[in-house]
Image (cartoon, rainbow, N blue to C red; front, side, top):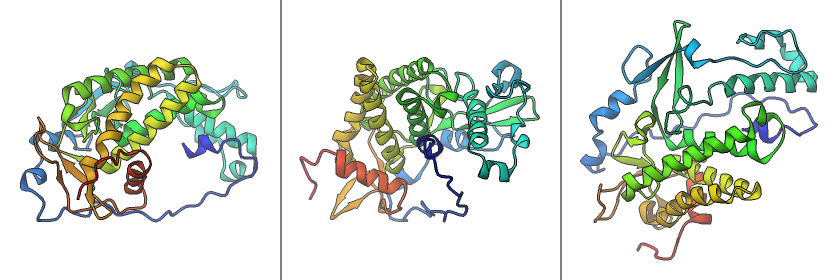
Length: 315
């Protein structure tokens, strides 16, 4: 996303490696409620990352039709060549603006091959966590996902709609609108199935329409989703897609009106994880661990500060 947002900068920016990692979720406090600490058995299977274990969906590469479209200025490229990076050098990318744009366009065209139903998207339109390429013959899709993955996808789709440029190497404006329509439908079904979560999403099974895989919600990831929806709503309004913007706004508003009630503990402290009873009826269980990291946790705190409903502050 940073590449796409900064694509119009004329100055060459030197890449900076070694961003310090942020260690989050080092462990849960022993005093947290036992029913929150215990995971549903299905989540332990669904969250496995290994390509050799269960929880994935095999898709033959031929059936997935993963291809790389050739860059416009190089007509001799093979459309099925995934090794385009070998045609570039580090010096060339640092010194040649046109070459750099060509490289990013190739990367995005390749990535765009995954932004399709049955490959990177489930049938309902929710985003898969990712996929393994196994034995160079098939993709093993990781059907589990979480709202941070949705946030990235929604932002990319909104970028495609909002501006001409590199983002549209991923897919067309029409395709981006269609995918957001699918997401709006999926989110509507999710809210209907899980009204007690008020639009907040735990780790979920994208292939099962967003079925929760654990009994608690990491609010940090949901802050990312909230801001992505905020961006998409405004982009769609500017593009004249008022109906679609309103459908996504409903989900955003559900999160805005419940965020303080769910996660705010008072005295400036925001829980990093919450658990809500399936049918409501009692106060949410909040983790002792707080949103204190300067990345996703900070994004959720900003979501609370700027967009949350503070009409009824907890004591």
